[in-house]
Length: 281
Image (cartoon, rainbow, N blue to C red; front, side, top):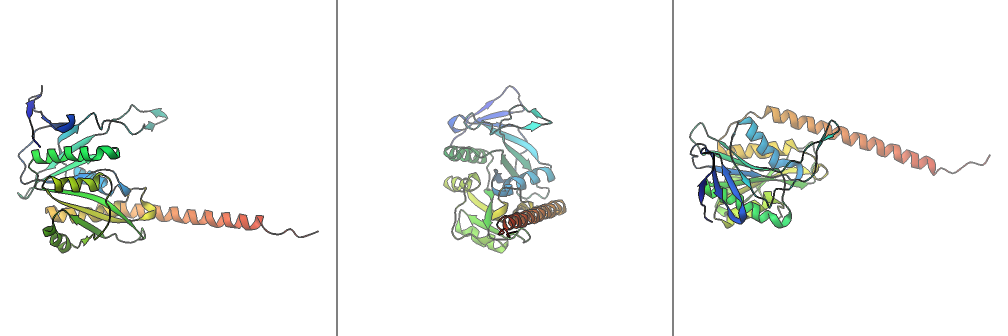
């Protein structure tokens, strides 16, 4: 994979041509020291994407650039606010960076607003890897969810997959369980395979969540993954705000379950009443 740089009209910005007509709009920035890349897209519980957005906000990460490609620039739907239809919004595929204050490896976080169509996933992952090559990224990280038979009240475990066997010990030392068999669907999984194909070291961390919560955000699983990731990156953060959010979500799920159970009991009582035999007068 090669790159050809050309200056844009704004001298502070640069355009890097990627394959298949993709363009990396690079916004300049400082030289990054042995950067790590964390790439995240939407998925079950939005475990990875919400973890990435949390990092961008808490670390006050600065914009580094964005991938632009007509192949993926399609809105998924529309938004309504105060009964008014908002203008169509195109998805963004953007990079942010964080300079480590202790001269450790710097961090690049990539977020994709949407998952591309299945036949487009490999092409988009390649664009992200090309950008990683441009910034001389040392290791690629992704995150995902692992739906399993646990309760929303339990503390989720974190499972891990690595591109190279010599990374297994690093995962196990961090209290991460190695995933023996399975399938990581979507870009959060595919990205790891593309990274390995391009010669990168890569790690995917999967946070457990209950089967019955895959359709809603799961801050508890995002927190579990974030704690492990920050350990790898030597980044210290106070997660008390995220813990409070996880507790509120836990209570919200608990209340929803209670309501459903109450509705189920009421429905069964009505059915029983309807089937009672009539007593002759």
